[in-house]
Length: 219
Ligand code: BTN
Image 1 (spheres, rainbow, N blue to C red):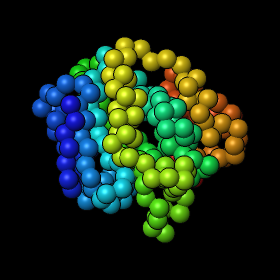
Image 2: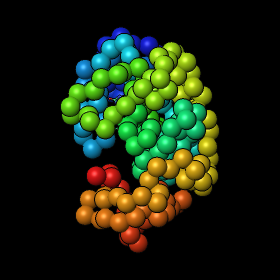
Image 3: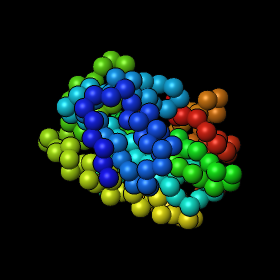
Image 4: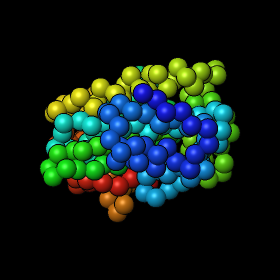
């Protein structure tokens, strides 16, 4: 089921409430615009109306709670395949190094098992201009040279994400590796700098110049 909203503070907030209220896995909340869209690391996700996609989906995978951070890397890889993009560690969607979209995951556990995961996804679909605060952003429309139908992108995205809710074990990250814009490039994550040489199946950690980095963001 898809719950469609006009302007909302954040689809993530709404989807979390729905998850707590017991909606089934696969339930998606989509908005035309957000007034308080949230990105990773407490950042704002600028969410103007009419052009882009703002979505949060409730998943209830029968997975151990400790695997839930990995779910976003798998989600990013599936989306990159379907949208013909690349992934930037850990879960940004990029085209030629510029950010097209990003994922945010929030989880509640029931003991050692996942009770729900809410995966939030923002995709720049048709936007052509970005504020100076987002110099490295682009959109699907700019990447492909044509306007896209948001509804078709939404269908593609839901097709890619919903099966994640059925996984009782996570596969290797080979699909992520195949779409990676990060492996082989020179990166800095916090204080760690070097060539990114590997990503670890167990926890999604990135090997930077020989040091495993479990969380963070490429600067
Ligand atoms: C990132 O920082 O790259 C993740 C961005 C996630 C933004 C999406 S837009 C839909 C959903 N609602 C939110 O408030 N955030 C996520």
